[in-house]
Each structure stands twice: as C-alpha cells, then as structure tokens.
Image (tube, rainbow, N blue to C red; front, side, top):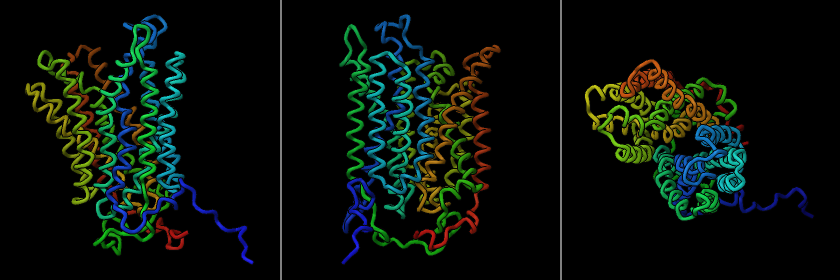
Length: 461
C-alpha cells in the first residue's frame, strides 16, 4: 500500500511549477508579458498630472480654504518611490521562490488596489488614505512589479541578458507617455461643475492597470530546468567579471561588490533624476525669452523618449562591450555633458543644451536597464531577482538626493543674489563630481571572492 500522506499536492495555478514552458515555446512571448506590467507601473512618472486638480477639489476652478497644498501632495510620489525600493528589497527572495506569475498578480492587486483606495481618499477628502493607497499599497505594487520579470527574462535570454531586461524596463520609462494623456482625458470626461473628476479617474485607472498587469501574469512562462536557446553554448568557467558560480542573496548583500554597485546605481540615478525634476524650469530659466513654456513641455516629452529608448539601446550595447565598460561610458561621457550643460547658457546654444540633456537622460534610463545584467554577471543567475530587489533601495535614496541637490542649491544661490539663468551651473558641476565618485566605484569592481560561492550541492538544494 502506497503512503500518500506525504505526497506533494499538484501545483496550483499560480505556482512556478504550473507555468513551466513546454517544448517549442517561443521565448519572445515573455518580453510582452513583462511589458504589460512595466508599462502600467511606469505611469508613476505621470502622477504629477493629478497634483494641480487635487489642489482644487473643493474650489473646483481654483484652490479654496481646506484644499490640499502642492507640498502636501508631493509626498505621495516620494512615498511611492520609497515603498518601491523597500518592497523590492523585502520581497525579492519570496519572488524567486514563488515565481513570476504569483508576483505579477500580487503587483497588479497592490498597484490597482492603490488607485481604488486613493479614489476613496479623494471622495472623502482624506489625504492619509491617498498616502496609504497610492503611496504605500501602490508603491509596494511598483516594487514587486518592477523586479518580477527580471530573473525570468535573464533565464530566457542567457545569450542577451542586457537586451532582454532592457526591453521590459524600457516599458517603465515609457509608461508615462501613455498614462499622462490618458489621465488628462479621463479627468476631462468625468469633470462636472461640482467636481474635477479625479476620483472617477482613479477608479478607471485602477481597474485598467490591474487587468493589463494580470494579463502579463497569466501569459508569462519560465523555462524548463536545463533549457537553453538553440545554438547557445553556456560558458564552462568564469571569465573576468562574468561568473558561472552562484552567490546567495544574503551573502551578496555583505560583499563589497554589492555596495559598490549600490553606489554606482545611486549616483547615476541621483544625477539624472535631479535633471528630470527640473527639466522644464531649467530650460526656461537658463534661456529666458528664448524657450517658452510650450517649447519646454515639448522638451520634457523628448526627454521621455530618450529615457525610454536609452533603456533598450544601452542595455543591448552592454551585451557587446560588457557592463563595466558601459558604466564607464555613462560616467565619463556624463561628466563631460553635465559640465557642458552648465556652460551652454554662456555659449548661447539651446540646441547644444537639448542634445546634452537628452543623452544624459538616455544614460539615466540605460543605467536602470543595465544593472540587472551587471548583477547577474557578478553574482550568478539563481538569486539575481532578490539581489536586484535589495539594490533598488539605491533608487529610493537617489529619489531624495537628486531633487534636494538641484532644488536647494538653486534656491540657495538665488537667495544670495545669483540670477536664475546662472543658478544651475554650480549644480551641474556638482553632478559631474558625483559621477566621478560613481566612476571610481565602478572601476573598483572585481569578481566576488571564491569563498562566497555556493557549492554544487547548495545550489541544487
């Protein structure tokens, strides 16, 4: 008589074992699944379109007593980015264990649910509910959704890991291009003489984002153990910074390589995010009378294209020249461009200013897309999702450092009599200095010491 009491139950619909691809599965179906998630969560970059409408929920046409201030609403985005980094750090190990489908659906529930809770907050005029909804719950959806496809894509594309992650993370950079006009259109459709339509817009967006992210979770697949693309020959030994060994996530967290990469990402993002937040104002104030508000808005849209395209292009380039060399380009070229941006107003060339900032933003996006493959090179594939999650705390820190540096240094200079047109030069030179520190961190990268590698038995356990 067979003992069935210890038999494992069949895998559930959400379990990793249930989504193992069968023979002949086309791996190019996996990037669209990742894009379904990243295009939705990338809408976080468009959240600012709700700021002004939410300052006149009571006054409707203009702010009235009791309406929220922009300074209060600004914390919604900041809280979401902080929760993105923290949730990615704390759920990475769980994600590696349960697989991408369960993680993507959890991200869909959190992100879509965050909009619904925020809609209640708008309806009740309770700012705390919006902090909880979009900031905390939605931010957790951002973090889980951001890292959920990373390991899966790298496993499906061992021959081109940079390109694969670049395709997905490109969606995060481009999500705002869809979300911004869609949100404005919905608010206009739902607005009446008695309310501005924000709550209804949140409800629609919450449902739409949940559905699209759920589609991504339903169509994603993981490769069978031992699968490899046709013609791919796995390296037999580690070479340079690219390892064939495995480092456990908890061990990786204690290595100098992890913290060097933490600062590499943090400093690259700090410089770029500071420019993103002030791009429109910077263009108008550095070239007063030459760059109009309409032209500055078009400039911001152009930056979004470079931010998005850079994620795919630079990540793909890194497959050819290596991750370390790619970041050397980011930092060396970035330093030159930041110094050039600071000097363009004296040269009087708006075209040179636009070109320099566009390239800077392409490398900002490229840094996000290249870092997962860099981690895979250094620590191996097995725990790359969890390690990537912990590294994204660098993004949370940069989300504070960048805007603070740009905004407060500019304000300090203006308060001390510096003209607005000249107030950004010193800031750009400081950003170049930060990139120099990032370059030093990147050049210090070495392979992880062998005593940190897991044995074959530990890897199989």
